[in-house]
Image (cartoon, rainbow, N blue to C red):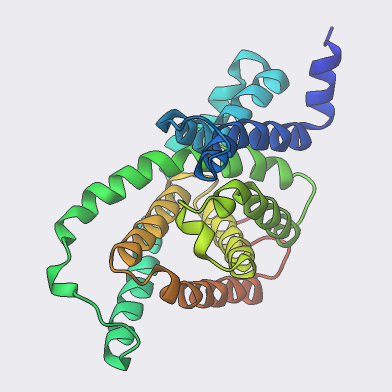
Length: 269
């Protein structure tokens, strides 16, 4: 016999997941934001870890209630699903290489940026990417590993992208209010559009890799690696609307080609 708490999780798994993800992450991020305004006595790196891990911790808790002790393994299995067409391993790298290179070269030629490209420590990029990969995967296990397949049981991908984009943007709110976070310098409208566009692309990658989190996580890590490069070069804000624009065009292309129902021609996805 299920307890009242289990009944709530089973009846409202997505609402339960999102409430937990927001609560856990914001317990970590809100003290950091308050600290930046001298409204909290201390800061600690564990706050950042808790904030980033919120979606995965929520997925583990809800899946355990839904499916018992095997629940968390069902969520994590998508992270090790590697049997899909090989090109989907390279799509994230190609996408962000083209955007980053295009912005750097185009901005330099046009005079929009004055960049010390020759003095940048490009050899650090592999370690930056590895760091982003290890940190971003905890978002994807929750958002795409748990929430997305639950959404796809009853919603079209177009509606899912809208819901996930909106909630993902709202989830970042404490970081957007934290003056020590790069997100605080970005226009809120641009961040919302970027979240929507990325949600479309993530669903597209997930569908076409047969429900794997590998391309999704690679894409997320490369996105943040590109942001790190722009930040270190001092053009994070100046390049942001270009990144949002190119990403939005890609998302619109997906919507136009596949339609709003499913961002895939693969009936097995």
